[in-house]
Length: 616
Image (cartoon, rainbow, N blue to C red; front, side, top):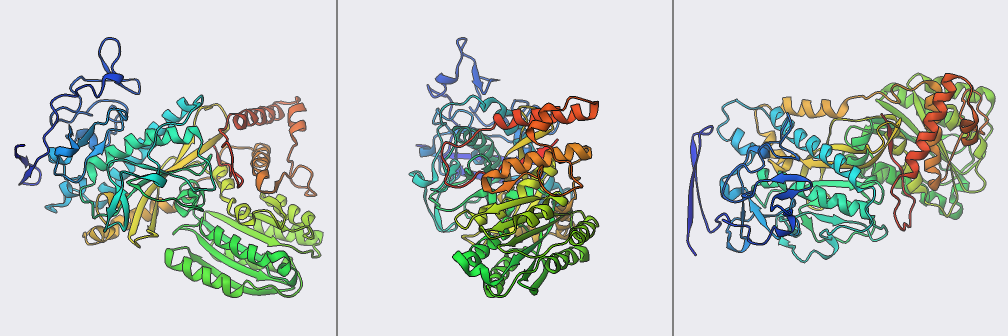
């Protein structure tokens, strides 16, 4: 053993870091990379040629190399130095298992080459050269770079027939207890997390393995202190797999990332959502009132800090209302308590007045997307004038209705027409069905309506530690069929800015207010819904969305009583061949059907899969 002393001069900061520790760079790969060499002895990762000395000695080895660092907008780590090290001969706490060469058992370190992370490099001397908005742009560049490459890699996984090797969080033998994190953690790699009631697809395990290499590059260059709480993570649409750095020991039984605020916020506009819930006497039958409470709380779990939620409870009249509030973590607890207190069964049933009350709430302060979720198990008179009035009132702020007929006695015809008249979805849900899953699936509709090519910022508190976190999130799209009008979302990924510095540290900076205004504006942007579609094309897209939601009770509208919609059945679309406009509609429908047939389905599943899709 010998002591390594490295002296690194940082000219931009006018200080010297002296690093002392037993963490020398490897001078040879040994046989570790033999399986990645071609017949000529050239080193390849994912089809990309790498130099033979890659990772040997401190150097910016990734500079100008694919997949990340050969673009016009390279991530910060591309210019950072690192090298491969022996983890058993390294005193630094942060070394990372190679993601590019996962079978090599090679570890690398940025710290041994003097990396301090972008935040420290930029803000240590506070000379005003950089702002927190610049730091936000670095995070966004990382997110969008990873997104670009994951989307490209995903297209190569269509024919995957077996799972890829991943570190399971349920059996994390490399994890050790960390008192700052309050759990068993491994910083060397990522972990695959899936609830015990779900089944991972081969595709998700393989995209997780690919994401691991990207995640580790980011944290290697940016994360400097194991006491600092922050994560990189992604959730996948087909099966509910959750991929996170760092790996943790965790075996959840009921965690599904697809129904978390960060997931839905990344793929939808900020929303004003009103829950209109029947609390009549019949809701005491078959524990329906308990199902309604569970469902209302499940919907809350899909809403984030830029979404507002309000409530209208009714029986023969409106019994209770709660004006819309933003769904912060503090408000979430308050709203849960309010639901438990006021959602109590008793009385008769009336539809019109509660719906008008909900519309009035939205009209007071409409959002980018305006949503009414209407749940009843009853029957009530609803006249033609009532239908016309609701549709006229809803049109002012483009309110979409999702209606839920619970149990065999509910008036399905009225509920269906209300939804279909207002570009929404009607669900028929039996007492034994999963009402919570059906109602919290509403966001999939907005995945079809909105295409988000940027990031959304999410402010939240970690459930275990209570740490305040701020994440930049983006959707991941399946672009394997770019000619289609509909693209499938295969996941959402996020990076906590806490990887760079905790929120309190950022808040102490002089330009915090400007930074906070920036991330809010990024999260509040209203994106056009169903952009570029004619009325007929939109109707057919909506029918497609409804058909994909059939697993959770959704019905199509082509046989509904509404007269102002032209939803077409599959047979009608296939058979119409007259006229250029109708021909275009037919082509869209056929291509949609082809898209759905190419979707990866889980092998087994105890709960319905929520499909997510977006109009290009």
